[in-house]
Length: 476
Ligand code: NCD
Image (tube, rainbow, N blue to C red; front, side, top):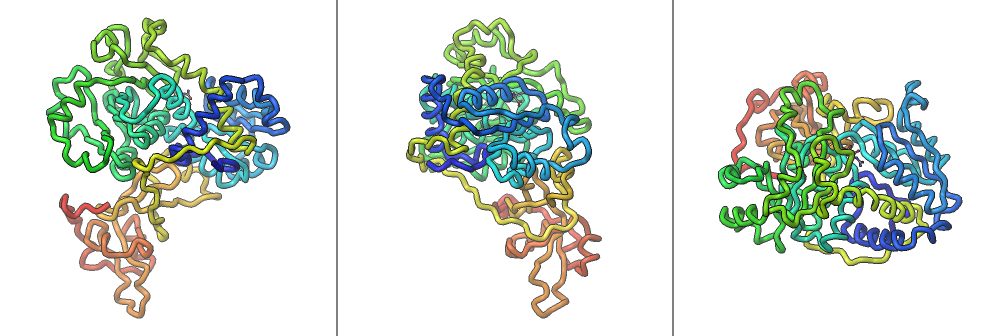
């Protein structure tokens, strides 16, 4: 399996087979830690942490030392030329000429992608704002697999701050790809972001049941959830799951609880106004007494605050310290593979959960900005421009290529206007049927009427109205 020279920016950069073979190498590392000392001798890892970190940073650095390599590091933006206004793209070019591999944590969502685009050496995302944290997911899956052998059919609840928790986002995608059944149990106002839900609905083979559709089934449940993602053995079974089966599914409880803390540092004024911190769900001895949790493993990426009571630390179901310890062999395997110091044993891909990956890029974007204030596209204006892919035609939805947040432009036109007839240089409401009619490769999007008009487009008959799109017309 060829992993040499690749990046790990999102968990979807690795196929299921590649993750499995990385785990088998992690087993070898775990079983003979001291014997790996010559694997990466002479190689340098740059460890760039622009946000606090204990586990991720130290386990990466420990991993590189165990492989015999060296580490150069930065822990503070203020100690780098970023503080003088240098772009992260320029920083990436320079650091890429000093080191053989870069591990980066940055508060901007999409920062790791920009660094990977410019560094010229493998880049590992160690957390980009509230977006993704793929190596934590590798540790989480590895810990789960060690206890439960397979992830297929595993019932797991993701618990806490599902909105801002980057570990949750990466883990959700991976669990969906491995065929797990995911119960989402968020704190109030902290549900999964819309873009994560849409990815689950459109890219993976299972089915997401949103709260709106299951509220009457789950209202009496002791364990309230906001949504459930189901991947039965074969995708066509999904169409027929009646409410009764859903009730049975819920009654089975979960085999693992993945607890996360409230991401205080990511709460953003208006969007998180009115958040009831006192209602944040807590996992403690009392909760675990319930018979539905008799065999439930408790995981947490750590650090914990108040959401995970200390009274369960000695409980055999508590896995979180073991999970953190596994970070070293997993990251040793990852570094060795990306540096080409090891080849991963080939593992056959399970074709039943292959995800859709290809979306058409939107080539003509005028005035549209990513709605996520924390997206790297708002900060790195010199080195990148806003870029989007078309994830849904009707209603029209674009996805930012950096942070994956979604935007729905209000006006559209076709780039084919110039085919002889100037009269066709018209723009339309994006809610009109034109959103489907214009070929994706010709689609022009505008943020306002003015944006269209300064480019010589005139309003069509379909520009003035917002059209309602019936369920039947929705087209992904
Ligand atoms: C997580 C992170 O940084 O996102 N921690 C980690 O890497 N182990 C989770 C958190 O900070 O809550």
